[in-house]
Image 1 (tube, rainbow, N blue to C red):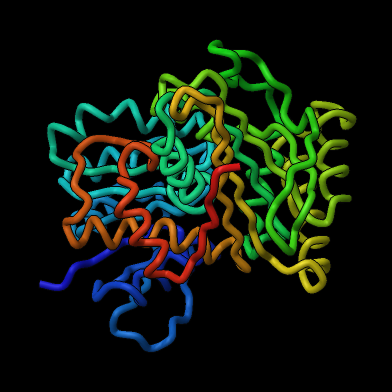
Image 2: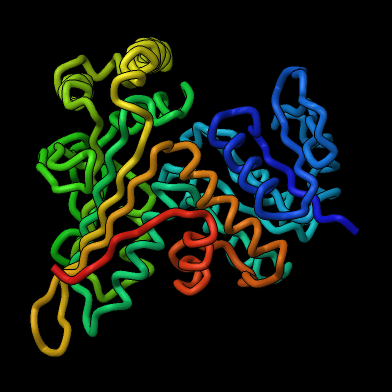
Length: 363
């Protein structure tokens, strides 16, 4: 029987990139969903289904008929874990591209049920979180005692992503958040403490700021010996950083807390980046830097990745995990952040097979 993969929110740019990755690297039939009817190109391996996540019975039937579900229907700030719950009930493996700790916490609560059902569920896949977390795992494994993780992300313009990613950015500015610093949880303001970080060409030295990501919360749990986890994000061109900083620190909080305010800012930003994308490109850069003890000496190990299309890079990260689940090479019942689910050897295989290059070395 042919394997089948259901991609919820598959008409979005990230969902579409995951579908393309699966069509390229597997023989699976891919079913993508959207809330309204759509014209599809003739492709026997790619099907379309009109489905709203609120239609629970229809969702159940769709999940029961596939081998893997990929949840790309963000933004995840407002989502419950109902899709995951139904997957567990039907014994179907699950992946998502969630990018907010509130959703990650909800999903991880189903760990015991997933284990009992033999379901492997991997959350926070994609590029960041996702590939970035696996880069950290690889870097951590170089040390005798890892002590500090510093993750930085940079996106050009829109990153090739849609309006949902803009919403996610502004929703991420709403509240201070907890970060693991010097062995304890400390409160950090979003888009604060600008730092200029050296990224690979063409980005070079660029500004990044504290940003609440799921890995701010999951990496300290995955690597309990680490005393500090820093997660910072920035945009190219730099004036977008200054605009985002103003939104976080100068605008009345009521603007950012109000759904209408978020929608307004998201649409304005999307229009601006659509224009500037033609000059900046839509690429992404990730920089993982781990500090710790190696052979009784203090050492620093750094790995970097650049990709010309942020959404396509996310497709590689998520698609490769779906591929491993279909092949049976990844089988780890429970609900896991990607850095705990995916061993480094499989990660390396996935990256190489997709032509993505990671530069890594001791500093």
